Length: 354
Image (cartoon, rainbow, N blue to C red; front, side, top):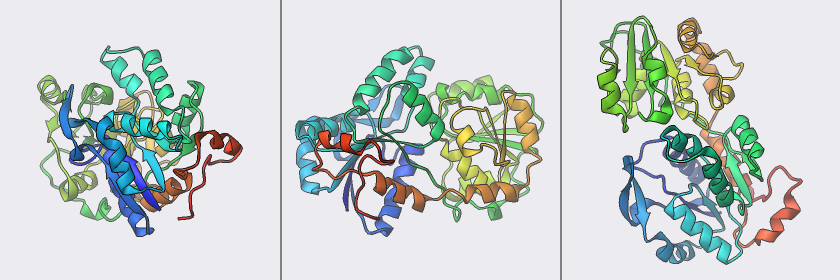
């Protein structure tokens, strides 16, 4: 298939959406598919308010049609609800072409956390954005259930994966300069990640935070005993995962939490709240501890065998992510009205076999 991705999230951004697209695109190539991405790097951009590292495309509406037609796609997938996603959605609707979308980010919770917009308003806007899609891909059952309760339809499962070669317990080092036990957290340093819930805990040893974001300086000043390492990637990050003693994931708003899989693949047990994301990734696997008492969870996670964490992580794969994605795609020229004929199937549109 010739697959077109319309996405406002793309390298050099560093987040779970970009990681998913990067890894999945690689796997799609292995399966013989041809992927074209329309991303911010192809347009003039301005920084996103509050997230200067995220660039928003200018003029996407004027150029998107010619770019899509040049790619001659068999299927279109709209990844994000930003300027590029909006432009691609409009182009498809004007031609009655089917397309799929994905729900990656819980913007209503993020905006409510900043007191910028009520959840009900943001969910109404997102529901309108996704409503014409032949299918809305969602990473976890708990998020799908929550969206269904808010009136979203045509929800489809789309799992995530991890690279077991990159994130490997064999990278573990005993001496890395921090007092043990080492409690690690990795991700964007922003209000929606709820990092103070981790940093304020009374824990032995060291708290280590990897990542950047708008709260970096404020939290580093507020919690001087914690170690803020900034951005770390590739082998350095993998080594930190493997060398830590427990991974603490304090977010209550993530739709999945790829960093948990990276930690588990590295043999690192997870402590988190019992909320969507951790409930789906950890569940009753025994590879982590979920509790409203995050301190108790973090201490209990120290007792989990590292081999058990690794084994659980290996049940997720990018290859399966790619295969599932292809199976959910909809042929471009299938008129939007035809999707009603497929509501009884698990996938509203069945693309060519992968």
